[in-house]
Image 1: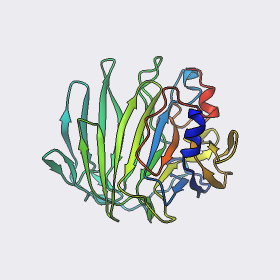
Image 2: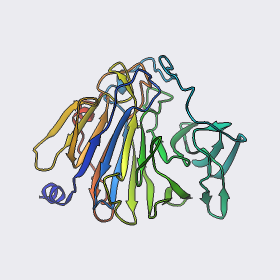
Image 3: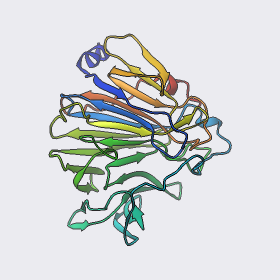
Length: 317
């Protein structure tokens, strides 16, 4: 009865797959966008891939074979590092790189402290006497990357796919234009003020050796076909990718649909998984990504035993 009530209450969203084939393994050619005129909250998960337990030798080095980035925009800056806040368990740092593809003009606030010109802000966690970077946001373009803590047999795991939260627009590539970002250490939540108007809160609710869970809430629905969120990743071949497969739950269907990321055309979905079923030569340990719990109201608490996608159900963890 509870499951039936939740199913009746959950929203579906319009998913468009605009991915295009490329040869360069360092270009985000996977472009999956989520749109809805009703969504006020949803959940993003970064989950270790099903094959994580079988990894003996990880790969994470970039592969610039067949890549020509000579025409990419570049804005010079003075490199620096700042620490906003730290405890014995968590800390937040920011970096300005010597150059970035967009100017670093978005202010970042923690309490009374405001920093300008940062290209990346990183949330770190102490785990088993080791510093683990678990979540990053790039203020100039609104990109996020997340990963769980490393599994028990590994001391480190890679980042892979990126995601966007907020009103999507294209400025050479899909971005979310931000006016300001703030972080609340007490709730481990980020507040995003969008350049187009409106705001969102991204809160870290779960981080362990299986997954990271982020709950997202908007002050109002992000209307229009542009979309309120996106998955950005790379696919050159099935053996050289960060995402190869997609699975989705469509409204009114008894089970999951599955397909290749480059073949799927998109459609209505109440939950979306994107990841890999077999190990890739590129960011082998990088997590799968899951988008779901779409609602036109506040975020519901996650169930104690979350239903897994077909790929997650086969995990060897």
